[in-house]
Image (cartoon, rainbow, N blue to C red):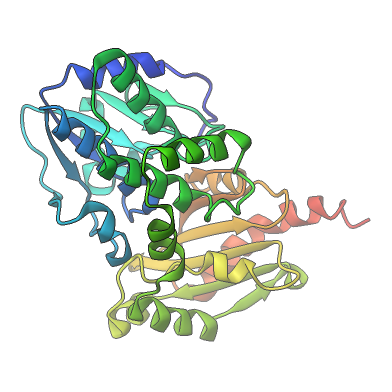
Amino acid sequence: MSARAFVSLTEADAARIIAGLDAADIYCHASPDGDTIGCAAALYYIMRANGADAEIKCCDPVPEYLLFLTDGVKIDDKPRRGVCKISVDVASASQLGAFAAGCDSFLMMIDHHERGEMFADGLVEGNAAACGEIVFRVAEILRDCHGYRIPVEAVDAIYAAISSDTGSFRFANTTSATHMTAARLHELGAHTVYIAHNLHAVKMKKQMLARRVGLEHMKFFCGGKLALTYASLDDMKNGGFGPSDFSEADEMRSIYGVYVGVALRETKAGEWRASTRANVDIDCAEVCAGFGGGGHRGAAGCSVFAADADEAASIIAEAFERAIYEYDGGGR
């Protein structure tokens, strides 16, 4: 994957496109998180509140803990014909999952990942902490230049998107601009305490059971500086876990002395999805790009192909070994 070299749309362009749409399908990435769901919900609520038709599409189920953002809004995997397609928080076509084959028909992509592939005209800002920051600026232009109303449901969804991707403003991607955006959303009525509780304090029962599996499968590499865990297809099936239940990369990096935390989840026989998180200045996106993945410097993902968990773990550990060695000064 190549680094983002340009932004082909301005925020005003993006706002003008949305203001001119009678109908649109808004697409999330596979294995959806709070940023993609929050951004999609925000655009949905804004378009609906201002007389446009909108639906949200995702190839995977929305995690239970995020359902409070959509409040019963139907989200399905059935594209409509004759409507425009917009993606949010999708770095490359491959992240669309089952929708990837139709990527050349997208009208617009809104994204904030530092590495990825442009598959449509895009409003892409790699220095934004969350896609929600970009969507909020678009929403403000829609309000100020086109008279759009921003309903409180959209305000909540955008705040949740930002809070999700910044770890409740704890991650290194959080900037002063992020805090100023959060302040404006608070002034517009965002239910910040309620959102923070639901995103960061509430754990579903299956998530806790999946965490137990993760702890049982912990492995350490590079002198304990890389912590890794995994869930196989059998683990997922036996526990009744969905993709969002097993997300242990942050748990792994919370261990004292660990530079990088990794969670591997087998998505189909022989294919393992890796989520990586760094505590130090190691470029996870660069490592993941070697496997066709991408993301941010401190948080990225990719897929590796291996016969079993041990082989998948060895592949990922070997890929990070050089980065960890160089961070430590080449052994000095």
